[in-house]
Image 1 (cartoon, rainbow, N blue to C red):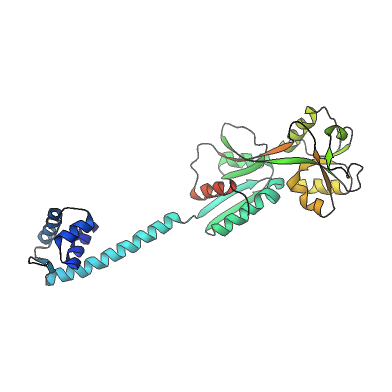
Image 2: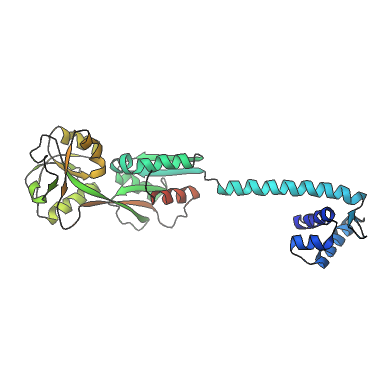
Length: 294
């Protein structure tokens, strides 16, 4: 006896017809008769009267009530299982560098938490080397970094390209420029990312491509500290536009678009452990990252 047989029996009793029950269940009338005969054989008693209209016997009425209850409970169980499948839960561990997390990633994090409150989203702000090691070891599920480096254990998913701009104190001689030839940066006092940080390497390559050498006077591993050094006129820098827009609007910094045949951009990518099956929460977060933030 199975759930389908219970439904067939109930349909026969409810409609009073073998043929209608057969049509409702997509089977032949003969199959209905065979299933009901098997039920009666199992219980050793007649469950249906055989007349013009199929009607339940006393034993059949008892069985009908019980079968109805089982079908109702089975339907509710099916709904609960579907709801569990559709619900996104669990823990998602994401690592990001400061200059990406505070500006580019933050609106996505807020949108994800609002859409999926059952997910325990852990976001760690860290150096790129810490994030890469954590992805490889399985300590983190996703990393969002600048200039993601190739590694045999890491899968890279391209996310965005951020425009890089020249950034100055409002008192700097170049602060009045909206557009700037990169050669104007030659010999300027420069506030840089610390050596070894991928953003520093990428910016160094861009300067080298236009044969511009700057005078690096101070280095930082944190973009917030770097911006403050530029604000107090320790030197100029090259930073992602999104990281400085608020400070420019407030008058704490000034910036200029760099004129060059080759766009000055910083590649942002998502890294994850190669070959690891993504959880449902990870799939949803990756899908969100591919949309425009709200």
